[in-house]
Length: 242
Image (cartoon, rainbow, N blue to C red; front, side, top):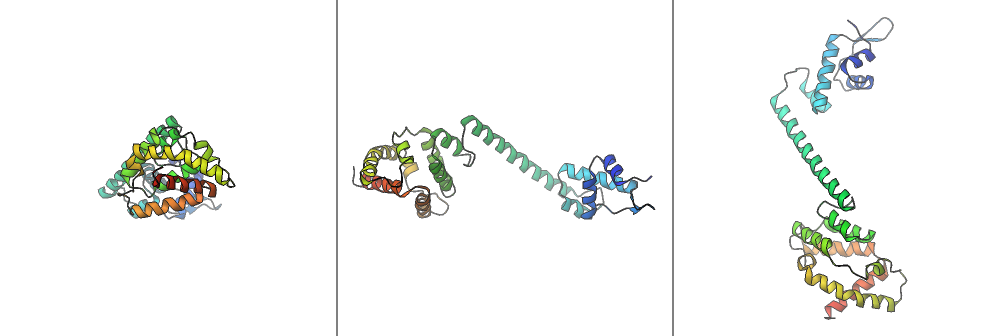
């Protein structure tokens, strides 16, 4: 019995391209050729191809199949290792589905980690604020992330949010001062209501100082000079007990 490449692929339930690739990587031996130059596959090629396809369908990589050789009695450790990998993949996909469900339900941004995405979505953050949260999520400790998420989830509405977000870079001193004075009471209430979120991050992997330095660098890039001046003035007002 002799088959062409296409016939072999059809019998094995795969594609001609796959057969050629298996030749290229050394998994499937090349057959002899007919007098007209066309490849001539036999039963041994079909059996080998079916075994390769079966292992691929189970999840084995081509490199692992090559390491196994042509023996169909595969080591139990290889099967157990694959089973563990598949289990981890299934768990990762399960978590991804849960996260996607939360994102769809809460209309949350997709770029934030699962702990913060629903809360950030509910908070209606600006693009700059969302980027700030994203950066901070990479340096904060787990306890601080939880406290921060709770603050975002249930924080009261700040009537000055829109003004701060749209503050032009050339806003004059009087405008900046007025905005800072109206923002300060809200920031003070937030500090009192969410002390864990507003306190230094003592459980951060790289320390509270690194968190503070990262926050300062992120703010310098995400907010314009007028907004940064308002933030500075709010800090001064609160430090003076105002």
